[in-house]
Amino acid sequence: MPATRVLVVEDEPLIHQAVADRLRAEGYEVVSAYDGPAAVEAFTAHDPAVLVLDVMLPGFDGLEVCRRVQQNRPVPVLMLTARDDEADILTGLAVGADDYLTKPFRMRELVARVAALLRRVARAEELGHRAASPVEVGSLVIDPASRRTCLAGEELHLTPTEFDLLHALATRPGEVLTRERLLAEVWGWEGGAGATRTVDSHVKALRSKIGPGLVRTVHGIGYSLETR
Image 1 (cartoon, rainbow, N blue to C red):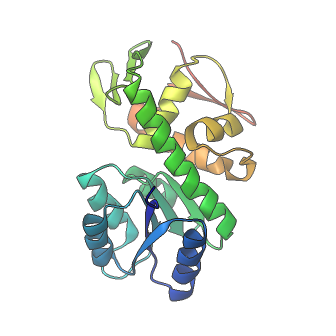
Image 2: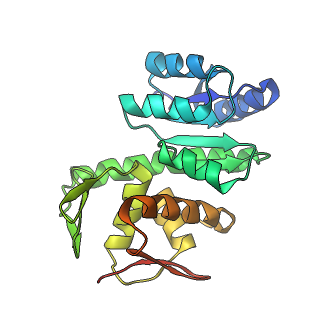
Image 3: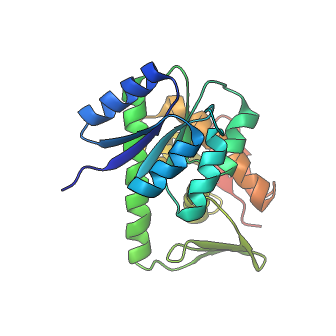
């Protein structure tokens, strides 16, 4: 089996080398780019399975890279950011990023996140092949086979992770799902209690598209989809 290809986009040479070396040691094929334009070119030329993408880049930033590559085909993106700022994180999620890590980070965690993104894509493809029935909750209709979502007859434009998050909640309407459970089911993260803010950020991004009333926060526990 050919190695899974990862495009690493990072302009700081030491960080870039460390990430690339660790991914190669884990059995991945690594393609490198150091600025925005080169990242888009490398994506087109090498067709990677996943991107590890820094936000701050020469040429144009990682947000623009993410926006451009997602126009060609959906691809899982792990964003690297030096700023633990919620507005920046939500902007990244809005342009199609699936997950993020704040610098400094542990290489072990980065490798685990990459693997989790790839598992999530594989699960989504398997679910689509099974032609699972659409899920209906009130005026919300989620079709896992076509990966389309409609609310009150209007199609919603969700990122792959937003779709998977909403589907996980909609299959058990009214049930409170903990952040840890959502991390395991949507992101493939087992025991990822330290990454629960990822869930919160994606819920906020999802609410910006479906409205504030459908997903209920159960403080200190998690989230549930309202059935009204």
